[in-house]
Image 1 (tube, helix red, strand yellow):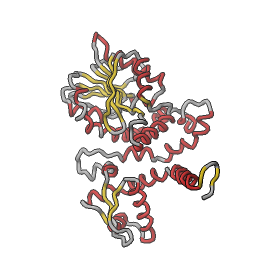
Image 2 (spheres, one colour; image 1 turned 180 degrees about the horizontal axis):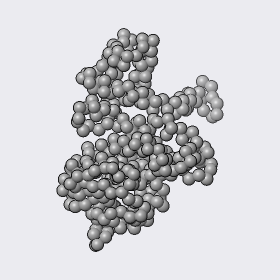
Image 3 (cartoon, helix red, strand yellow; image 1 turned 135 degrees about the vertical axis):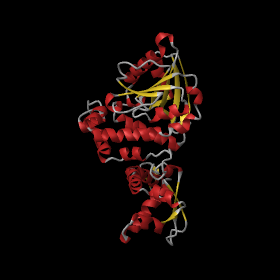
Length: 360
């Protein structure tokens, strides 16, 4: 075969396929959004068994002229692991079943009150056209002096944008709450982290989904969810859960431990160091020797699977848009040391996140 650019034809064609796959990557998001909007996971779940192609298009009320398009979308989603496909495609006997990924799209309504996690809200946020469009400004952002991609696209930082757009603040809060549902599953594997604590402050805890999971697992632990006044102002707590509005950049309420779940990746190193110093002050008052509990991503390309690394690196680019970042173990060590902490432990927690215990 011929050659060009110092490569033989097979290498060039492989390169072409890789470029095209990345070029059309947005179709993964859009197809997933379509499946979520149509409630396909709910349809299969309520069906009680794999649903045939004919049954699916009938339930979706797809016009006959477009049923073949649904088959192509489902083939794409199946190839990407969202649904499982079985049966004979040629005779329209193929059937679709749920996978671990699509089981996370089953709505609360379909689960009939059960507390199974549903990640549809975070997909809804990530696929929102306005929030996606900012990445069209990457070139202008990277070559200019404006600090964040949000400011280039919308004229203000992300937190200002959310404050001025209550509908997106609501979308954001629902997305973060849906993600926090999975914490409950992971608590069983790290109960020792919370044992022996009397008080905990969940900094940036949003609407309290994570805190409620911890309260359920550790009913004697008193937890304060500490977030911006506009986030927690209308929320009510319980006997061992309360909500307090404030500014983590100024001070953090005193406690045995401070929890930072998916908070520090929002900020630059300099800002993170200041937040950690405030956490250190919170758990060190009155001679207390508490700790800080960080739930966040640690990039580890050498040990992680390709899918796990790809997820983490995608998250890093998302954070780039708000002047945040996902960090390697070495970068976490730098933050912890610069904030004045003496010791820490890192261990896997759940999914693509790890848990870091930090001690003054």
